[in-house]
Image (cartoon, rainbow over all chains, first blue to last red):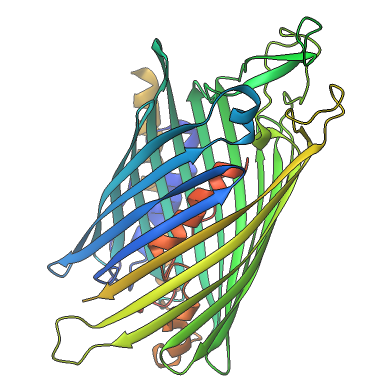
Length: 386
Length: 86
């Protein structure tokens, strides 16, 4: 029996979203809550003179037949000095903690997800709220997902007690997953993100020519636009091979109002050995064109109204390759625990910048070596289902 | 306030159109479509190795690592599911 439901987004320009939700909610069919599980992970990123590591713990449990609640606690301990810090200041150490609590609700076989996330550092505080709705239809062969998130940031700067800025962002997401055959799933996603407020990193600076400086250049604070709107579109596919293995891939196209265009693609292969071992190998490519207001070297401190030298806004490409291994075992039928896995994943990443130069290089101004770096990324975790 | 009332009126108009026009009948016909992959044919799809989100804690971390080092953002989460099976 079809159920009528609607989420009214009372914004004139978003009436199409309303139409889609109304239609989807009407075509009710199967949906399932996430499985009860707990994960405890150690993560580590090491590259460009910086080490970031820490734990992440996830707990998820059903409450009755229609509700599942979850909580995630995550810590980044950051130490070292990246190229931005090495060129301007001394190394530092800080910590970021992120806490997420969420709930999934199954109502008339529509799955609704809500969550709240707080991210806290000594100079940054962010709160975000998420609402997602997904629905299976066409005999559970198609899943349509819609999401909305809102985030509010407070930005401070170490050593400057009077510095306080704010930013907020909204995200609208739309996803469609389609079972194509008994061995192939294909998904498409689109997401619009809007930011408003102070969007700089307060520690990053532009570099400009300065004859009075011994190095021939100096640094001064970046000036960013106060708005940013981006759109991203992606497609992904998973294909099951005849001998319990799978290949998967995804690709994304991205564009925003700052002039950045980016594409990335990933392919991977999963192989199993017996019922216990799952092996994964993958490679990912990324490329982007610079923001309109990016320069590696400005001719003077006030050359333009908007100026940035953030290397993530430059033209560059990246490649990463990784492997993962999972060992799985099942508990006895009488046990409260159902199964458990031990997991280890490693990725090697490399980024090469086309117009971001290493300002620490001993070379004439503007002729320094182009910057590049590699990083090692590790995830080691245990998962338990109950 | 005037804008909100106008938006609400637009939303109600669309809802009315959906209920009174072909949307309901279209939904009914959509539900009549026979699934070409039967429930008993979905064991491959239900295998964890077919799920992009089989390890959500690690997936979220990797997403965070790339977001911090790349200009692009968004549309990198799977819609999930698709076969209604856990």
